[in-house]
Image (cartoon, rainbow, N blue to C red; front, top):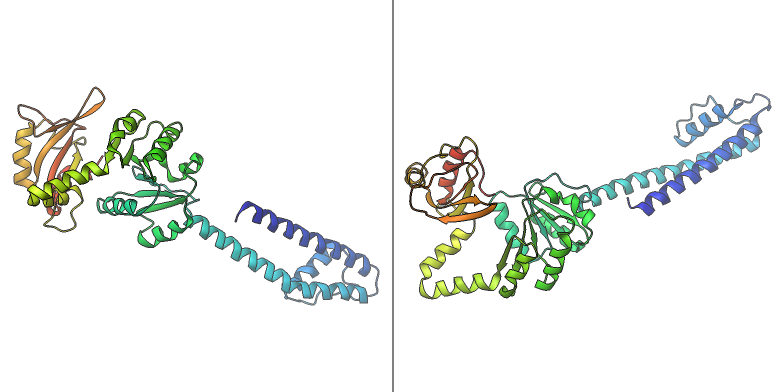
Length: 351
């Protein structure tokens, strides 16, 4: 229930209670001293009130005076209104709880998830691919109409939706944004995205941010503003288009491996972290290349190492390079290969 509705309900309840208290006191004063009076104290009066309002009517306590019976008649008629008020308040309370849950006001316990700020058709496509990769997503939108659409399309166990103004940074805490693996700022234009990145980093500075740009020339600007990944839509589209023109088979395969594999025969590029206890720790890269192909039908294409706090992607390196804990291996595989690899690595793909 919204705060004004809570306040209104409380005032109504207190007013009803005050009226009944006055009537009970008046009833007791009228009945006291009357011949054969059964209502002699305020306890008797309250007992008679609840007997009447609940329509139980034991008959053990009754008013005997004409004025007392008039008050009893008022209690009897009031029972209908009281029941209606109570039922209405319960229904309103349940409806409000349901609405708050739908709007995401109860928060989420998602962790290591993707937070998407802003919703549109492009965002819907991104969410579909993320869910295909078994990632949970928290979507924040300021358009109430989007809530019903999102809830209709996606399971609440995988997608959490929050209705909030984007600049209400306290509300963003309900999306458990501090525990997110990355924040995707999916606003309308590049200028709006840049201003928002500057503002949100004042509140959540240590998070990873990703944006898509209409103007690829702004890539360095966004990176200087603290964006981890700035992706130019036009640059990707133009590269793919050019590839379709002079090497269509390569382009088709490139498009396939950019997304998750829908079918067992489809391939995908994935990265897996080398966790403690991984059997590949200390193994030369070249040996791992052949072992993975033989055991899992997985093709190793590169390794990611951290050097001086920076991630460095080494594409199919030569020499005696050994795999270490916390490295990432980038591999091409079909869905069957992914299942085999999970049994070896005991970990899901991704960061």
